[in-house]
Image 1 (cartoon, helix red, strand yellow):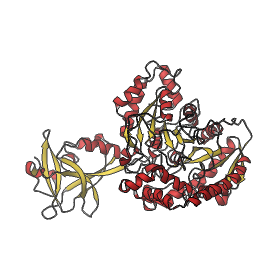
Image 2 (cartoon, helix red, strand yellow):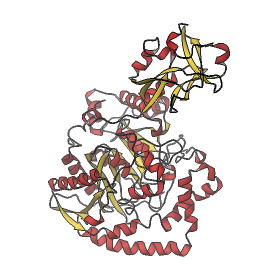
Image 3 (cartoon, one colour):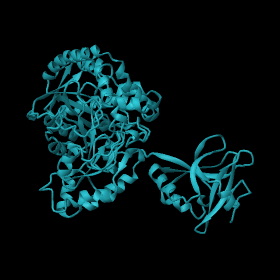
Image 4 (cartoon, one colour):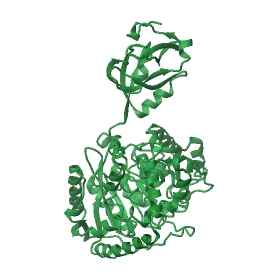
Length: 588
């Protein structure tokens, strides 16, 4: 599939180069190839088929999102499919879809699945989930950003044309930056939150991840549908777009933070040069009132609001919730009622000043995030590093602004992007300027053409796993081709720790090995280590017959890797290899 951009798919449909069925088949296959941590619930081909059949008499002329595949963050309802908010014990099955989802489906979009997220949308990292840490699409050692982690990665990896996230504190922008996507955080109330598990109900927004700004606008034009059932929904008159002579504010240099990332600092100042090329004029502004407002989000009234959303459930089911998530949300109980109102008063003061700053320019530009982090770094310091990622994002909904994250550079680690910010109701203006900037950046080759394919971008680092094989999978033996077919690369030859007995178990006429741990009587077994991508490792494991399996085995020297193990019954029905040094001496 050359491109999943909306305009490209509609052209392909019109020219007969693709059908809705072929596009969906491609996307479902691609979804199966991704790391399992991207998903909470993929739809089956049969479940998706009903949405496809509903379009049989339609076309792009009758449905603006005809045949466009999308995925949904798992705190947003899709009828008949469980919603978990990344907490299995919280699961419920909605009878109807969220208003925004139903509106998109009515316009011809086709849902493919529910994506992983930071539990209860509490985090900007993508690691706070019992379904696993969602890996970055460019380098799996790095966080994807959150809380809308899976929604961003699914689009970045070519599974869908767009996706829905939510954004209370930056969850629709940080993942966009780290995965080379457009991330639109609409004005509060523009997109309905009916059928969305709340984080902070007065601040929550449904957000849009897309490949470019024109796609984001196409989705926004449909989803921006007033919902009278949502008490926070608003009818917002959109500000006019800008033709020329626009000014963008940039925080004072001493107010910029990159947390030690020289690459992100350099990319930001290069992005400012791109904005000049796009027609803007830079103006230095005081960012302090925005930062002051941001500090209220996790230190006052709005933590209390998070407790109002899901705190009672957490109190009743404390073991069902991750420790970091539980700690943050239950801390809302520690805030006295008078302090809640004091928070409201402080926010109003900060907003008055911030609005004056915003009114002096057409928009403000900041990094979307000051630095990226690896998954291991976040796991070692989850609260502080998450706070760092919110430095440029936490104020947005508190101050009632609209924003759009735009990718502008590919750094050695993960992509970098900036965020364009303006008043509520300036969504279309921001989309227009985001489109200009995106084109100047070179990461989008233009509205009338296609976005660069993954092959045209710098190679992404694949998430890999090492596998120890013995017996029939050794080089030169009958099943070694299975490793070659999956693109496995040889790492080394070695031996297990002196703690294993090996048995040959014959299926299909070929003896397959299995190791049983025996610390007293075991010996060292010759093994070869091969490296596979996570996707291909999953395919390899799926083909292993019972009573054999894959588990952790210890090597000479103490390292542990995945390798062939066997259930105890193999000792009774298999043939033990008594020459423990080398399977190559076993001829069956």
